[in-house]
Image (cartoon, rainbow, N blue to C red; front, side, top):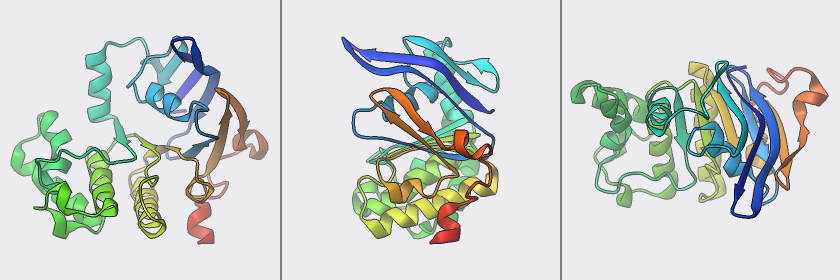
Length: 239
C-alpha cells in the first residue's frame, strides 16, 4: 500500500467528522471516495494529504507515519510526493498559466527556465498550451481546472488528491478534466484519491469507497478482492 489510514478520527468542536476510518490505496490505483454531503469525504482527503492532522489514529505513507510530522515536513510532501487538486483550482490570480504550473517546481528549487519548460510541456499534454500566457481570469472554468491539474501533476507526484475536481464545471468540461486526469495518472503510475458526490465521476475509478456519517459504509475492495484492474478504467471501457 502506498498510503493508508488506520482508525482516523477528526472532530470540529463537538461535531465528529470522522469516526475511526481505515482505508488504503495501492500504487497506481484510482479510488473514488463517495457519500452524501457532510459525511467526512473532504476531511479524510485533507488528513491523507497532510493538510489536517487527525485527532486520533494514524496516516501512513509508504509505511511511515506522516500525521505526527510538523507542518514544514508535511508541506514539503505536498510539493514533492503529493499533488492536490481542489474544486475551484485555486490558481494564483496574478500569474499566467505557465507560471502557475511552474510554481511548485520553483518552490522546490528548480530553476525558472527548466520549471517553465516543464510547465509548458504539461499544459501541452492537457490540451491547453495556448493558455500559457493567460491569467486565470481570462480562462473558462474548465480551462482553469486543466491548468490546476497540470500544476498538481508537474512534480510527478506519487499520490494525487482530487477534491470534487469537477464540482464547479459543466458536464462536458468535467468529462474532459476527468479523462485527462485518468490518462495522466496512468502514464506516470500515480495513485489517485478522488472525492466526489457524482456517480458519473466515481465511474472513472478502479474502486469506490463510500462514507456515511463519518464511517466507512462500503468498500468495493471487500467485494472484489482485487481493485487493480477491477474496472481498469470503468470509464475508459464504458464511455
